[in-house]
Length: 272
Image 1 (spheres, rainbow, N blue to C red):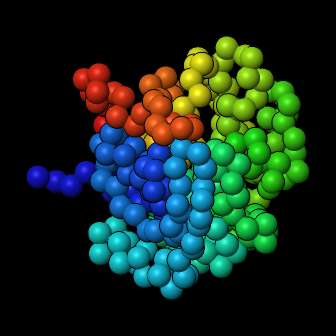
Image 2 (tube, rainbow, N blue to C red):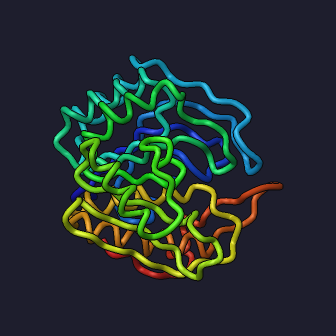
């Protein structure tokens, strides 16, 4: 039996299981690829927020990455929480030497507003990490962090995308989920500066959205590993995340996670 496509997540751990490497691996399993992980940080985290975070040494991150890539190989890599300038630069160097599409989720803060990236690391993200990305997936807060562009409308999303693309990624997805919450649609913009794809989906009245960004980036990476083009991969990932958001469930006393297994629970076959 041949192995399924292999996808590597380079990210932090969420002890509550809703985001981070836990969300990444659940997404990869749901979408039919073999997920592998490089742990960059450990968080004490639950539905109420992040109570503590401890990053791993760059040496440990590099050793995990080389161990997986040199023996098993990868068809796509996804990055999440990188915490510090040292880790950003370590991972950027590793990605630059890897011949596989890369999806960069430039994680800055948690769903609860807790910082997950040191302010001193932002310049390293701009100069070192973003140029390695096949696709970068910032939300509106992360766009503002990285570029200073504040998005208040759909036309602003074009301006934000142009500002992110100046740092060198091939494609950018500007996630508009935080835009105009009264709207009936959740709108994302995918562009490489030439092509434009507006992705629209119903907006669900469900507060349990923890892990949305990790899940989208991992889903894009999974579809890229399966040989889809970037527009195909992002559209399929958007559809998967929309279903996960619709089925998000309560855990603990705060914000619960999206449901990574929604299609499996409904007996729906995933498109490999």
